[in-house]
Image (cartoon, rainbow, N blue to C red; front, side, top):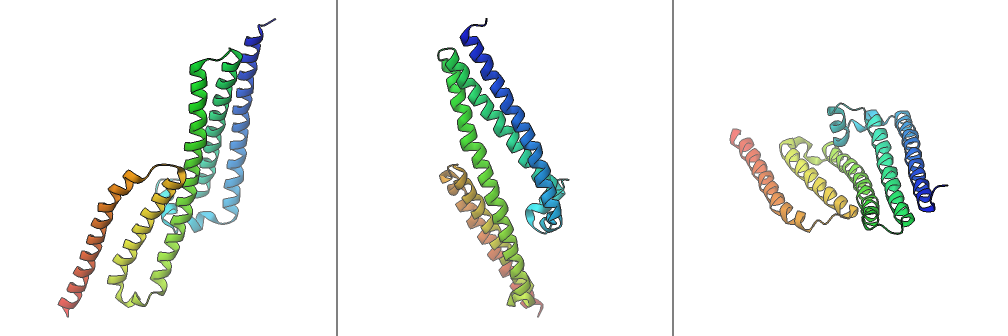
Length: 213
């Protein structure tokens, strides 16, 4: 007969291993479902038109497979952290309370609830936000009365795109729980610099156009 504390510890390890196995199966299943669903709805062709899709393709990935694999790895990581947190907590209890195991459990659960979930929320905000921004800027290019004055439209539209990208990234970090007060201090002079550059480009284009006349 094993001592009760050792039996409880082994049971905790078995439960943790089962959680990891469940995470592996869940991740592979979700990867298959996400990839198949995105393929069926024509996601690969559509996403290539926006900035995120172009970046994924340039990196050598198929967009549907990229999002499927990303979903799977998020599940793998989440279940591994969950297993580690539960296992260390339960083993600590079975041994009558071990300080470093309790601390490890708290750190792991904090990683899972704050950083992993924060990454998922930030990523979703960025994907949706960048998609909307690209659609809006594309709409400006197609419908603007400045189409005949493309030399003015391009720098203004791209400046607006960049500002909206920065706003979305800042908002996504805020949603994820990351402090952005120091980031805002850094971004302010960057935004002012971009603004000055955009104005200088517009003025230069206007002067060149009228100088040629």
